[in-house]
Amino acid sequence: MKILLAEDEKDLSRALVAVMTHKGYEVDPVYDGQEAVEHASAGSYDCMVFDIMMPRKDGITALKELREAGDTTPVLMLTAKAELDDRVAGLDAGADDYLAKPFAMTELLARIRSLLRRAEGYTPREMKFAGITLDIQQLELRAENAVRLGGKEAKLMEMFMRNAEKEITTEEIFQHVWKDEPEADPGIVWVYVSFLKSKLMSIQGGVEILGEPGESFRLVKAEG
Image (tube, rainbow, N blue to C red; front, side):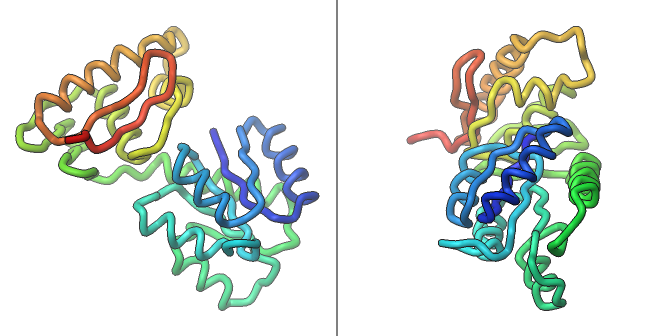
């Protein structure tokens, strides 16, 4: 599981990174709201933790920008104040939960686990990007034409559409889609990406998957 941590207090950030890393999370620390937007826009995360008060761009403004761009990653907001206005502002901006400082590390970890469980349990009926629609329940990909998908193809396509225009590594895909299959090999990722590339061409949706075997992939609008 990969977490983006946006916290400008360096000592607290180091402590949070140490605790979350010890619990098995991969953590990318950033120290202001602008960095948070740039990292979230470029990479795939399972959860994000934003402090409200940060330089260059506060956490609420950063979160609003990401939500307006279509990013649905679960976000936990940290605030030095427990006032109602801060909580309301964070939730209105699109936060999924908040935690007031000072807090116990055990509570922070519990909140993160809760957000991750909720995110894994929520699957919309349909997802859209550019000119294509993924019907998750019917396992169908539609644009000018329609094509059926296998279960793994649909799960992979869902991951790409949740992270449209972001780079996703082969390892991240493998851990997400094949996490319950210990006998699987990461090389299977390219096989299924190739299946999806062919099916995207067949439905003429103006969308393509960029990337090479063993490297990172990105779902983008096709040029021209």
